[in-house]
Image (cartoon, rainbow, N blue to C red; front, side):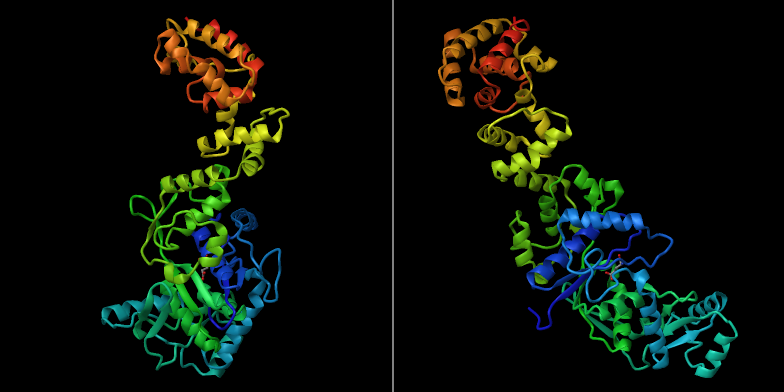
Length: 490
Ligand code: GLU
């Protein structure tokens, strides 16, 4: 743990919904803060007025809540370093830019786009190793610059990269030391003609003001980092530790996009993924606990996450693995939790009247439904035979053809009825035991006998274990189902 308390931020631009890559960045920041007993800040980088919308901000906040990534400072919760929307911080950027100008660390530039294009073309023609801004306005006197501003000439503010700055070495927790050559350092724009700050400037002003100690973000920002380092130095602020995390690729090795399927967090929520399973899966896209553990519960992530287990290689999004993790979370949920969090809401959403049952009944149902559930909606299909009645049960045509409408199956149902009628306790084991001798008695294959009873009672061939299901359905209704199915059997 570092000596200064850890402060990290996730700074999405509300130009779209929260996508999988952004969510993973948020998870790493959150987990890093939690593992280091630090502070997790959410900042909305809404400086692009054309593309930022309030609706997207709300979608992002909702997605963050669904992911369970509680932030300590930011929208809705406040904090000592606000405001947490960049649009509300315009004054701070202006003041910081002004201060840099006053200190001779930034300067106004009046070059027109035409002038800049001409300078660039010329630098190219003479094969100048330095292709950036040719520093035409760098040495204008303060008086001249002020006079031109007063005369209404449009200008931008550029940072003045110190002449002796040399190469910039970025220390990155994932990539190690990355060196950017001095000749690539431009006197870049920090404040546009309209007075708004550029991304590289606003971000650093905020990160410095908010005391950010570690900047964890996508590695598409690695190339921005030397510029940001220059801004930290100009501001006299300590440079944080950077951690640039790899891209997420689709199975074809191309950057994950819509072509690969769902990319927004809310699409996964709506598809029925559990937040815990989804967070677990995303955390593994570039980070590992020990190189092999796949199920990493949220509390383990929040205590064990560390940057030295983050890989710099691109991660591949694997929907199959995500599904597998989801199934594991469902399978290992305890019965009562599965009933309350998964079954009841799914049944209610599908308009199924589950009726009144004791909690033991629900627990027994959960036990057979869980291993057959990948998504909450599966609960509805798997439990359909249980919540049906002899009157409403739907007989699947194919299952009937395969399991019931065959010579000899009528006799199977008759024998089953008789064997079950004498049962004292209507329990799974007793039911199984009662049915057990039928194949031999009827001289039929076991599979045929059980298929027939299964289709008769459940309407299909894929339902949960027969004895358990019949026990949950109840004696009377099972008998009525067998009677009804008798007409379908040959
Ligand atoms: N708003 C920027 C983005 O969404 C933040 C980048 C950063 O973390 O510095 O890409």
